[in-house]
Length: 113
Length: 115
Image (tube, rainbow over all chains, first blue to last red; front, side):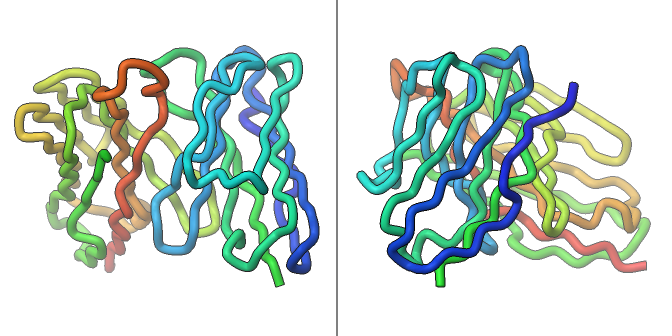
């Protein structure tokens, strides 16, 4: 069990640029989640995949955000035309079954200048 | 919309003392999770509580769930410095028939254990 892996760990970008983050879940986990966490707050749900199907999206996920999970393995989260309000820690998590605890990665910290 | 509230938000306590963190939530749910987060680190699962009256214990931490009161508690016994961290509860919203696998997190309780 190598855990959930996220890349990059840190990303600094200028407002208006596009960024893409990658998440590799635990290999046998078919459920994959993206959350966003700002300083002093709990994680907020963004989206959820079961295998390659994106089953739920938060209204926090504006049309500038898109997530994919081709072939039901790794996932990418892209933010287009970044804004300063997008600065946050983006957390990926995976789980084996419904009701099982989520295993979180170390996150990608995004800073938009 | 499901709301999850924790209190206190900040807790500073001396080593060796006991204390309880409370987690209240606003809609029906039988699934509640506790996580720990160290500064600059990701979240680590502590407990999964899946039914009314569930109680789980690990070391100096004990969590319980009362679904009728929509309340979970995380009790710390004889605190030690290593328990300093932020603790989050998270609830799965069962009021939705489909797509109810997202967790709603509380704002966290930042616990500092003073020697």
